[in-house]
Image (spheres, rainbow over the protein chains, first blue to last red):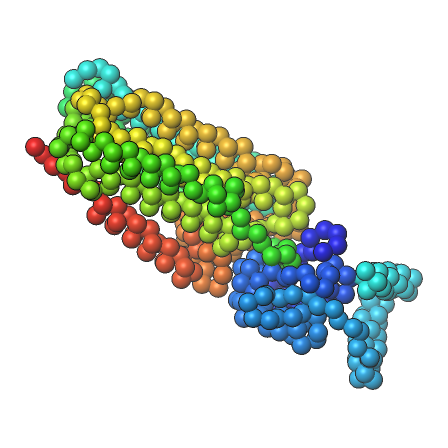
Amino acid sequence: MPGETPVLQIDLASDLPASEQIVRGLRATLLAGQFRPGDQLPSVRQLALDLGVHHNTVAGAYRQLAEEGWLDLRRGRGATVIERPAPAPTPRAEAEFRKGLEEVVVKARAEGVSAGTVWRELSALLSKLQEGESR
Amino acid sequence: MTTQWVLGPSLVMAFVIGLYLVMSYLMPRLTRPDVYFAVTVQPEFRDSAEGCSILKRYRVEVTIFGVLAFLIVLAGIRIPEPNYLTALTLAGLFLQVVGVFLAYYRARGRVLPHAAAPATVREAALVPREAHLPGGWLLQFPPFALLAGTAIWLRLHWGRIPEIFPIHWGVNGQPNNWATRSFSGVYGPLLIAAGLCALMGFLAYALLVWSRPIQVGGAAGAGERRFRLVVVSILVATEYFLALVFMWVGLTPLSHKQAGPPGLIPVLVFTLAFAVAIVVIMMRLGQGGTRLVGAAGSGSKAVAPVGDRTPDKYWKLGLFYINRNDPALFVEKRFGIGFTLNFGHPGAWVFLAVLVAVFTAIVLIAPRYHHP
C-alpha cells in the first residue's frame, strides 16, 4: 500500500445511507491509487465495528464494489483489491456524468463560487485521479 | 495481640483509601477533554468558570469523604477486637466509594445542562487491524509455566506438606481457617491462578479485537494506539503478577511459620507497588492517551466535540453503556481510564457468563475450610 494509511469517514447524520457513503469513500480511495492489487481491506466485522454500523451495511458496500470489479470477496480471504481495467464508457454513463456535473457546477455558481475556482478544483481533482491511476 | 498485627491491615487499608482519594480527585481532569463527568461538552467548558466551580465542589466532597474514611480506618487501630477492626476498615472504604459516587453524581447533574451534541462523523483505518498481544503468544506462556512448575514442586515435596495447614489468618496474625492435604487443598490456588491468567489474556485479546478506535489519524490517533498498547500490556503484566502471587500462596503449605502467612510483607509491598505503578502510568496517559497529545491533538478544533463517539443517551448514570445498535463490545469508560462493556451487545452477556463461570469454578476449586 503506497503512502499513509487511508482513512474512511462517514457521517451517521447524513441523508445519504451509510452503505452508499462507504461505497463512495472506498471508490475514491481506490481511484486515488491508495491501494495496490493484492492489498487487503479490513474485514466486514472490523469496519462495521470501527464505523459503528451494522455489518450488513459494510457487507452490502463490499458486494457493490466487488460487482464493479474493484474487490475480490472470496470466502475466507476477506476483501482483496484487484486489478481493474477501466471499462469502456457507455453512452448512458456519459450522459449521467454530464447531468451530474452540470448540477454540481450550476449549484456552486449559484452559491457564488467563481468560475475560476470551479475550473481549478476540477483540474486538481482530475490530476489527483490521473496520478492515482498511473501508480 | 501484637501492635504489628493491628497496625498492618489498618495501614494497608489507609494506603488504599489514600490511593483512591488521589485517583477520584484527579479523575475529572484525566478523561477526554470533551467528556466531563461523563457528559459530552465543548472542550473549553471544563476550563470555564462554571466548569471549574463544578470541579472545585466535587473535589471538596471527595476529599471530605476520603478523610472521613481515613479517620475511621485509623480509629480501628484502637479497637482490640479483630472482627470489629475488619468491619470498621471495610465500612471506611464503603463510605468512601459511596461518597465519591454521590460527589460524581451531583457534579454530573450540574454538567448535564451544558451537554453538547457530539460529532456524528466516524472514521476507520482501511487496513486490517493486527490483534497482536505484546510479546506475542510466547509471552503468554511463562505465567502458566510458573504455576505448573510450582505444582510439580509441591508434588515432589508432598510428604513435607502437613495433613492440615493454615490458609487464612485473622488481623491478629493467628490462623483462623485450614485446608487438608488434598488435591483441591494443595493445587486449588494454582488452578484458580491459571483461570485468572487465562481470563486476563482473553481480556487483552478481546480489547484489541472488539473495541473501536475513536481517532485514527494524526497525533490523537498515535496517542490512542499507544494507550491501547499500554492497557493491553498492563493486562499481560497482571498475568505475571497473579502467577507470582499465587505461586507464593501455593507454596505456603510448605512453611511451618504460625504467626501470619510467611513472607507477607514483601508480597504486600510488591502488590501495592504494582497497583501504584498502574495508577501512575494511567494518570500519565489520560483516557484514550489524550494527555500524551494535549489539547492540540485531541480533536478540540472540530466544529462539534468528538468525545468518545458514543451518544450520551445510551449511557446510564454515565457509567453503563447500553446500545444495541453499536457493534462494539468494549467502549472507553466515560469517568475512568480504560474500557467498559457495551451491555446492549449480546457478547457482553456471554462475557459476563464466562466471568460468572470462572468465579463459580474458583469457589468449587477453592480449598474447603476446615477447623481442626
